[in-house]
Image 1 (cartoon, helix red, strand yellow):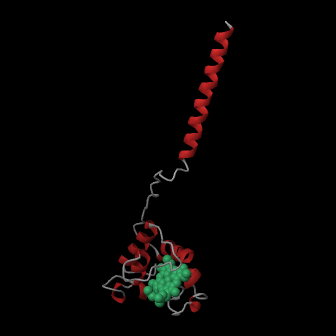
Image 2: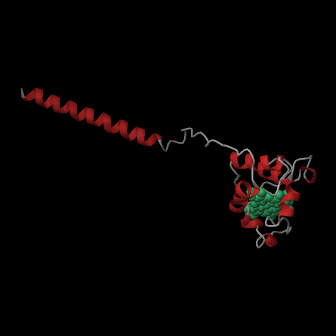
Image 3: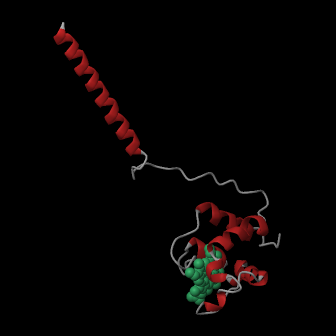
Length: 142
Ligand code: HEC
């Protein structure tokens, strides 16, 4: 009788261990580098607005170098993004390379373009698609 009780307790301990190990493994799988995280869906608005959709991306990722105050520190002193005329110029395909605007070619890191942001990193696919859609619509001041 006593032996049975011990054997039973032993099985419970073993079962507990299995649960603990399984728990630890599943907890680990969250930080597992091989886990695939699908990118968040990119729902482009029907009409991409400069003010509401494009500008926030530029402010967050480009103004550190291209704001009215900061662009003057750039070696070539080009491109003050707070001047819409300049944004429009760089967004115009005819002013770019092979009819691809500097704005789009630079953020896509196309060959022959200076990759932007200039301090490494790249905009997300959705941010690039947003800016590209606005450029394709003729870069309106909307
Ligand atoms: C760390 C600083 C820095 C950041 C951040 C940055 N840029 Fe630039 N950008 C530069 C410099 C420097 C130049 C001048 C490059 C040259 O003439 O070689 C430049 C030039 C440009 C030009 C002019 C065309 C050209 O190729 O010379 C465009 C367009 C441009 N940047 C777009 C962007 C966009 C869009 C972002 C944000 C997504 C961005 N940049 C972020 C530093 C920066």
